Length: 166
Picture 1: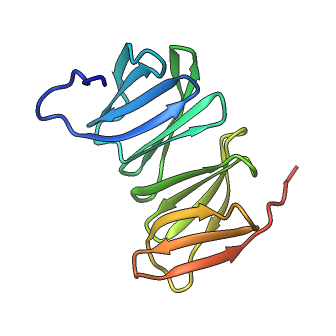
Picture 2: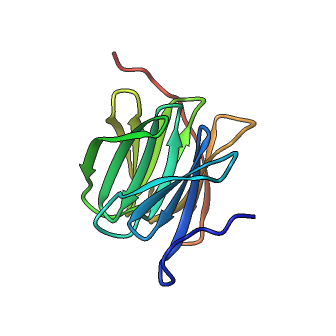
Picture 3: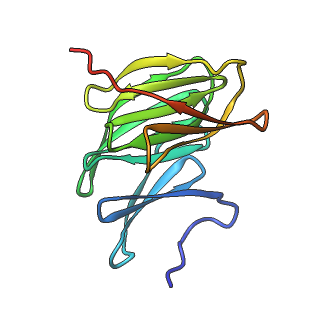
């Protein structure tokens, strides 16, 4: 067991494993730990406001969301740098990475954005019909379906095909 050394009023909200590191969200900061030893490696302010979501994207990147801001971090060992920050129209409520398709899916109010994490560009915008905010998105591990849980209580199954645009 390892106790994290954070302020008493700090809000620990998310943890993400990226390679051999644990990225722990503490309010608007990221605390970095070695997975094997739990040694503290450092911390930094990731956003001005509370971090709402964090995901590991492949071997090289970690994406964080805070309100309507997405930041993409490049992580080479303990060397971390901000490679891109994007302002969305509204708050990002959910991030999901599909390694099989190499796509990042993010929810922005009642719109789903699909990103190419290699080129760091959005590829598609999807609006559920009728519009409803996304709570959770999951790619099925037995089919080409996406399962969407919407805040109106609906569970939807979508089929999709990834088309490479060159």
